[in-house]
Image 1 (cartoon, helix red, strand yellow):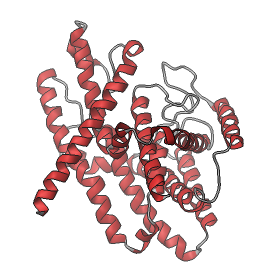
Image 2 (cartoon, rainbow, N blue to C red):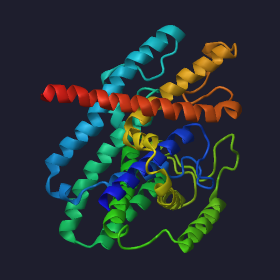
Image 3 (tube, rainbow, N blue to C red):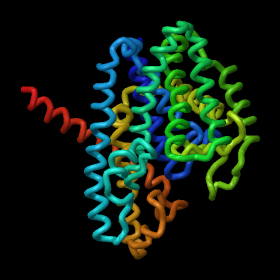
Image 4 (tube, rainbow, N blue to C red):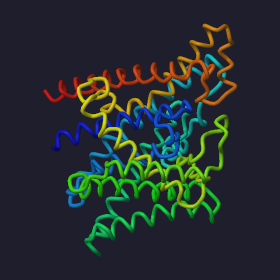
Length: 362
């Protein structure tokens, strides 16, 4: 059962990263669950699913693992893409990032993670590190006070609600942004832990009645849309990276819950049919590399399409990093090419790392 659960988590990670990439291309893979309405919460949820309770008694081991798996590759990617960004600036005259100084490349990763345009999706990595560390320490303390899973769930849910209302009553700054993102994301980390420990093997939450309830709830949530114009974005979206919750009340929490349930449901339904597809397994195992590299692959594809269509390549510099050429015609081409290239690039980088470390160890 553990093997099946781990394989399902791999497929869930593959779906999650496809949702992130499709979100940057401004289309939805799951219909009434639009981009930016839950996919980042889904990644925090997955992290909670994989959180082991024995980490609570072995903090040093947990911290070392997270530094190695999250922060070390983050700074390696930042170094590589800083070089690429400098080269692009020499060729095009535009520097896709913040000025190069100590603050922007040492502190900014923990404030907003947008020191480089090409690696801005990696803001999630440093935020995940901060979230997991604080979650570990808070969880340890609350368990000492009261060891009741429902009390814990309510506690972290209150933190999630608080994060939304902090943005309503206080002006946003870099410190508040970190607080808001951390409080919001900790709820979903605990929710993932709660699901793994107390739901997945004890309760069937993927029944026809549950499906009907989630669809009805999502339909009601659409009533709280503040934006129905696809040109400007799709309703129910919230921008966690900037702490922007534009929808009413706790709708961001609710639409995250419905989206996470829908993602789990899709994996449950499709797993028996897709479990042996190597490409999906690869994708789920290299989500970090896909997150880090997909904007650069899109950038290169845009440059190629501009050249093929006789449009000056400088046109790209007139738009933001996510701008793509002729989206009506090319959106799905971008999606397929990006997923294939970044997945196999990630597999290659992972194998290269294993090869290097194996030779060092020997």
